[in-house]
Length: 451
Image (cartoon, rainbow, N blue to C red; front, side, top):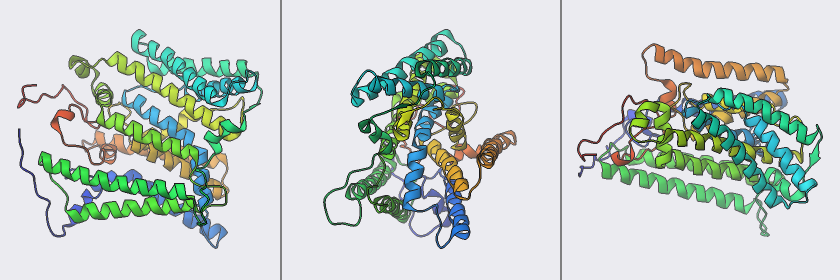
């Protein structure tokens, strides 16, 4: 079936601004709520720290941005896995305990068993996979609710961690610490910035240009409504400026620093999991089961296998997060992982996931995690204690979910649903069996193709 392309509108129209980051005609300014909140928080704390400390703010400095990535990368990694769990309609309370258990096993394997650190990392990932398979079995094939399974896991694996570690602190070798404290290396050229960091930024800009061109070509091919060319150009220019400025700050920090290795791992995971959830059959099955399990099952989705894989994947990412934290701390301790599951869950819900499942994105969860990170960081820069930080985080989480629930009760579109609609979705009917931010009552059928 062929379709005629809808030409991009010429001239300036104010409503075209709402398409700036939507990639098509369905985007609205509501999509920018979470990202806008993050920008407001960063600017607010920059102003407050400027007024408090002078002569410049303390938030948007190279050292502080590096600290934020290093200190919260493990929570953001947990959020990537947690959003998939929550989209499925589950919850995982065991991730902090799984991370702590993996950390103590990996640390002991290097300290007492003389295992080389690359093999220790593989061992840690294997521990995460085994734990995830255990929990996935109970959820997927026995039918015990994930809340109960992971609550039991939280107690079980925390106890195992205390038993194996005997409440001791076990140091890890220098090589292993790279994944938690390392930076992109320097290249011996007389330039006042880190070259690999800026090359990474240029690669990101090239990808932005490529993706926007690809998006417009797909929209033209499918006959979708396209934004004017000036909108696409403005979008790419703005995003490129943000990427280049941020990269410059990372590249010109104190000597010996650049873009952190934990940030590099996080960036790779964001790209991989965004592709999985948005462009693969398995990703569409996650949204389908979370939106309407019975309809997905009737359409041939193996929901038990999806449950099993999602739970196992969460534990593998928890194991990775635990190893990164241990590497950054340079030792595994008895209190590792405490409260991590709460921060990960809060990041996902602030980032737009629905309590009932079926809605959420990896990018939204990362933005939600960054909101939490800069809240923690900004309040710490202002000298506020853990009590104030905890209260502020609780209020932010409650309002983020409460406003969305209230909108639904009033019969209005979900605000979070608008916020988290995937940017630039490919409008190919053959690939749109299930859309992430819709809850289907029955599996859709393409009557024109007879499928």
